Amino acid sequence: MAWIDLHIDSLRRAVEPGVDLLAGSARAQADLPRLRAAGARGAIWAACDDVYLEGPESLAFVLRMLAAGRDLVERAGGELLLVRSRADWERCRAGGPVGMILAVEGAHSLLGCVEGLAALHALGVRVLTLTWNQANPFASGCGATPGEDRGLTPLGAELLVRARELGLWIDLAHASPRTLADAMALLPPPILVSHAGCAALRPHRRNLTDDQLRALAAAGGLVGITIYPPFLVAEGGATVATVAAHVAHAARVAGPGAVAMGTDLDGITLLPTDVRGLEGLDRLRGALAAAGLAEEEIEGVMWRNAARAIAAALPEG
Ligand SMILES: [Zn+2]
Image (cartoon, rainbow, N blue to C red; front, side):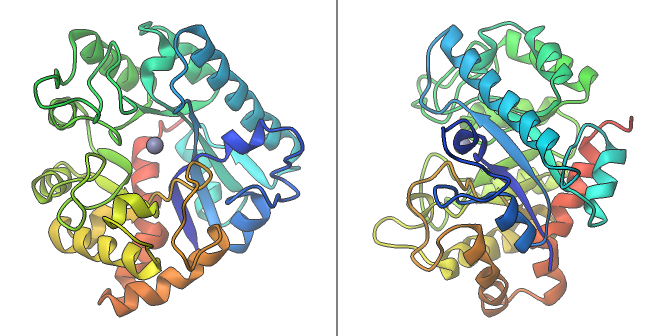
């Protein structure tokens, strides 16, 4: 059994006093023991300023989380690897150390400074989520009303060029419809939407419409399906079967090769009722089979599709 998660927010826990993600923590949903038990080859660990601190506080918070991630790797005695290149990733993919691919969730933390991206890259960041829900100097987020949605700005287009030069993978989760379309037209494959659901099953600004899923697939992209109940059902509790329904729908519309998992663990306070954290997601396998996915497709969703996309997105180095 193997697992890759395209989006966890566990660095949020890592900066909390008294939480040790190496030993495991009751306050975490994903930590090293849980990742090991799940057969995780790696995850995209987001430094996520979703409380949307304004100005320098936002950057300071992100830097604290990135430092905490690097500290975890240093203390893990080879159990975790900071993934900077395809060669690093191949070690994780083969079942070596659990890969930590560092991400910054929301380019608002760059404070409008394109060249700040090179500094984040030097710290090991390999994924940048272009927006959180709000607009930033680079692009509109999914919180924009249709009238407010400006898509990618000229500065945002510059940022994408710089990201490509550096070998940084742009994540379009949280993007507005226009930002998604604008950025997809400029970015090389594989296009990434790391954590979202299907709007056909649950209309929500954070979910992808069938047209967007098809466009993503046509652009060689990948969507990570979240397990956050409010994105999956209008009301009441979700279960792993609900998660599986979103996976199955995305697989039907975009093709099974374009679907992966991006749980948002440790960034969410609500979970499917039959899941307490990463440890409950072994049930997903059975739920995906019950939703009609073939064994090979399940393997693809659980890890192989993400493994392939990560390898393609990382610089060779
Ligand atoms: Zn998010």
